Length: 340
Image 1 (cartoon, rainbow, N blue to C red):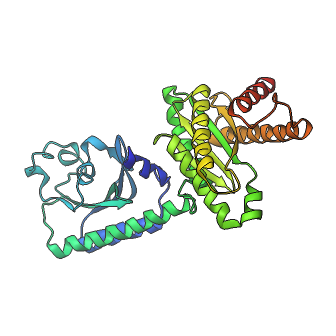
Image 2 (cartoon, rainbow, N blue to C red):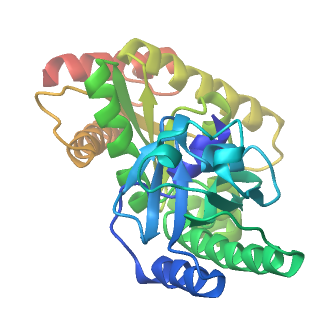
């Protein structure tokens, strides 16, 4: 699951061809004088080719793939003659097109997760000497560098979470899968309270520390399958997979408990608090993740605005007080019922 989460965090599956990857597969094809060279990424059920030279396909099933075997180890995986190898002699990719006889794949490793391979394929048996194996490793390291660059483009540098771009891509894939399977999905839209005051009174470094702490607590109360992102500034979001609105409320309570614990132990003269909105995914209403995110954004800000108005008008009123989790939850429920 951690390997697949890292793969999906790249937001690269099913994207278009890119010259920076094709350049490296062409280089491998020329250096090793082979007809086929691939950058192959392996998900649950398939190997998908980010770059494919010499093969008229975009993906194959994982259970017949050579790369699915290659990612089980850390060294270059070599099959000198597939017809003589009991693991592959009856494989459709060997018996039929493209008639693979030789395969060498170097695992592509990012943050200690093996995501796929740079591989070379020939239709005749052959072998590689140690220098050639080192060359294939060097080319794979160049592919890994390009994957790392891709990850940086979808990652928030401060917190390590996905950024807005990464979230929109990754969450859209998750949403489509959940729609097909009829799985409930809820979105949390979170916004730090009085964040500007933290920056103004304590400096931006302290503000950064507050953001990092908040991000860590969100990760702690969520699951690996949930999609978490910092959208920018003090705005965060979580796509909760297989979670109803009631279950999403429990996540909020766990997050509040974690922050309350931090605030009690902290020697700082400010507390980390947040406002939130919960939006249940409705397939007939939310065709894209952007639409679901927009609804969550609007709800959270309406709630935050009205909460501040209520504080100004009646500071002593327990009915609208947001100093306790119970009263804030009650306020949210009343507002959502009123908003329909």
